[in-house]
Image (cartoon, rainbow over all chains, first blue to last red; front, side, top):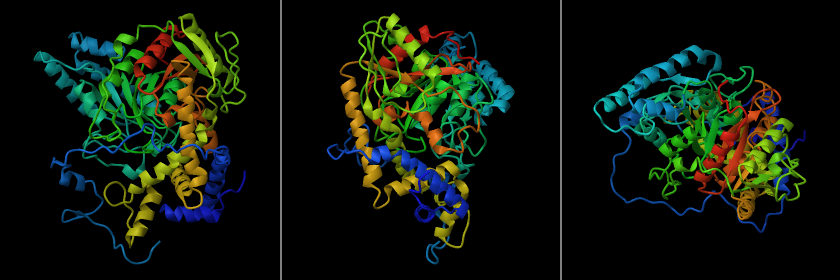
Amino acid sequence: MSGRITRDEAAHVARLARLRFSDEELDELAAQLSAVLDHAADVEALDVTDIAPTSHPHPLVNVTRADEVRPSLDRDEVLAQAPSVDDGQFRVPPILGEAP
Amino acid sequence: MTALGVAAAVAAGERTARSVAEDYLDRISAGDGEIGAFNLVLADEALADADRVDAALGRGEPVGPLAGVPVALKDNLCTRGIPTTCSSRMLEGWRPPYSATVVERLRAAGAVIVGKTNLDEFAMGSSTENSAFGPTRNPHDTSRVPGGSSGGSAAAVAAGFAALALGSDTGGSIRQPAALCGVVGMKPTYGRVSRYGLIAFASSLDHIGPFGATVADAAACYEAIAGHDPLDSTSIDLPLEPIDGALADGVEGLRVGVVAELCGGRLQAAHLVGTDAPAASGVEGVADDVLARVQDAAEALEQAGAEVRTVSVPSAVLGLSAYYLITSAEASSNLARYDGVRYGLRVEAANAAEMNVNTRTAGFGTEAKRRIILGTYALSAGYYDAFYGKALRVRTLMLQEFAAVYEDVDVLLCPTAPTTAFELGAKIADPMLMYLNDVCTIPSDLTGHPAISVPFGRGDDGLPVGVQVMGPALSERLIFRVAAALERAAPGNGSAP
């Protein structure tokens, strides 16, 4: 198994994705992702410069609707599912301070 | 009894919807302890749905085509006020404030929803072992997996817990478990069935589709859920062709291509008419007994009057890599919404960023985390062009090659899954080995083309084998018709374990 991804790289990507792993988990993750990327070498090696990318299976144009007021989801029903609510709004811990 | 048999009996007044619902609920309570198909059984709701159908019949009102038919829903389909978990701790206890369009359409067709079925967490997996609530077992052999990620839905139909079920298919998550559980599973053209209310995994590849014990049942379920929906901006606004009339049409004169690469490059089709040279390379891991059933199916179609030949789609072997790069990238973005703020799990901390990390670390299982990390990596600066950008170009290549093949043939045939159902635990520690389960189903997710898996005989271990029929965009009627011909020709033609 190649070392395409190191523990440090895995740790960096984990920070970007807001996930925490132990060193042991990071080593396992790095090894498994390296194996997936080894398999993806077939795609990586391909010369497809003349081929346009497809981000979607069917060509689509923007879909819009008439700008009319319509009923939306019930606010109380939506807020009832939130972990913490204050005065009709989602409540979160302080957003300023120490970053993880 | 088939789903259509139930609907006919209920509509004719031979059975009440309530008595049908009670039968299915009894079977669930007797058998699901061993199988684990359901995350949640909706006994009270099902009986209330059934009573509404019976009351409508009593008043002489018209009832829908699925009147009284018990249906199971994969637990990534939103049901208003009813827990929808994606088999994840992240959404445990969450009650959606709206229902998926497919759920509304099934109810309008008279269906009775009996429960929410187990899946690999967020539909990421091929064995239903990645569920936070424990694995589902294959009704044909409980030491084996049912496939995944819609393993609970496939097992529910195979075990007779539901007459129909819905699943979602991003890389084969309807067709592969259908094959492993010996039932019919179908993925429509991208955009044919609304995804409004399907919890997103990889948005450019997610599809919803039906499971049934028979092709006609799956077709009836598809017809009930298909059609344009203004709530899904990817929904196709084109009229639907009725499927029902086509199922008995047979395959006389149809041109069928057996995809050499998806048969591992080893298909020896010398006896087939119009044979091209077999491909030198193919996808990994297709077992000999599965290949033998595909050969049998090809011969059966030939005997029924089809013109069968081998064809080549070289880029099919690149599908697996392209799929994992694209879906992981999209998943890393889609799953960013689970941040502990608006719904689902929150693990508190002194500040919001730390709360996000605590919540996501506690809420996601191993496979979901693995894919988020892979996707974040594939999208990150310096790697985007090498991996994600190239994967999108492979998708174009594949669309071009399939378009060329469909100039010469009407439909394509190949295995659904490379092997029959494997033992629980056999592949869970090796992600790459697990991913190989989807090599034959991935291409039609990348192209958005419709495909169906039909049981066709058994493997050397006595377990069901599924063969796959694929067609060009919007060819649902045609692939159901070919599937029906295969069903008529299938050895034993049994789906009950």
